[in-house]
Image 1 (cartoon, rainbow, N blue to C red):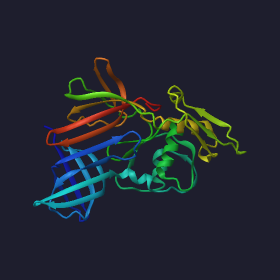
Image 2: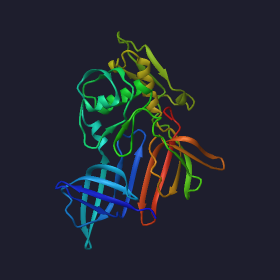
Image 3: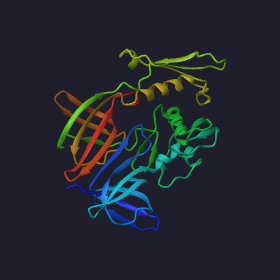
Image 4: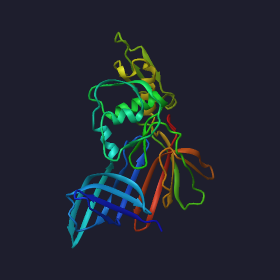
Amino acid sequence: MDIATITFSYTDGTNASYIPIDFKFTRERYTPYTTLEGHLLTARDITDINTVYLYINNKLVHCGMADFIQRKNAKGRNLITFTSRGFTLLLGQNEPVPGIISNVNLKGLVSDNVTIPYVQCQEDTKTVNYIYVKEKSTIWDAVCAYAYKAYKTYPFITGTNTVNAASGRGVENHSYFSETITYYGETLSTSGLLSQVYMADSEGKYSYTKKNGHSENRKIVKKKYYPLDRQWYSSPEDGLQSKLNYSNKGYISAELQYKGHKFENIMDRAVYQNGTFLINSERISAIEVTGNKRGIFTKVTVYRDSYA
């Protein structure tokens, strides 16, 4: 039987572990942090909690901040409601020094701007000539620009708080033929699709443009105009393509849910078939783990989009 444990770490250095009443844990391809929420029972003070952990079968799955902790006493029970987001969230809440950062890789880009507890970066990534950091942008914005310049991709979080740009490392394969499948299916979501994007040149004319074939095929017309972006000064087309690719995120997906948990990571590969439904060694883009008195269940989603 799978067992989930919630551990609270307190400001005095002590820890306390609990079996939750219920919980939901999520990691997603385009969300720069993991999320954990749920309920448990304890009479201990909650105001000095500083870190929240989720363990499944004694293996660490989530390490995050105590975003929201509430205790209610009802009918003699101290019910705790908790929400925690991974520490990589703080990359989107800190600003790097504006200007040009030359000859930088992923780890250098992050560590040269901020030190955040528990956050690590993928090692040995490519060095790019420069990243231009706009005023009031975030470190995560800079990481996104780096990932596209270095690998033509979008960054993602694996493990508890590890930032990644290269997608082919440490990948595991997961087969679901022997699991107890509770459901499977597919989704189409077109609300985010852009149809055409433009960027101004040095004279202020919108001479750079890109079209989105996914929108044209579905009769969607949604145009956006952008000023000249120094982040993409040497390659405006790349800047526009990155905007289109992001607008396409997860517009087609396939998912399945099974009983248990196999510790999947973003960019691992999934294999499953049932009749005409097929996931053929596709990249895992989202994992949702839920637990309650019925047990632990995992939903695995693969996106069929521009970054698939």
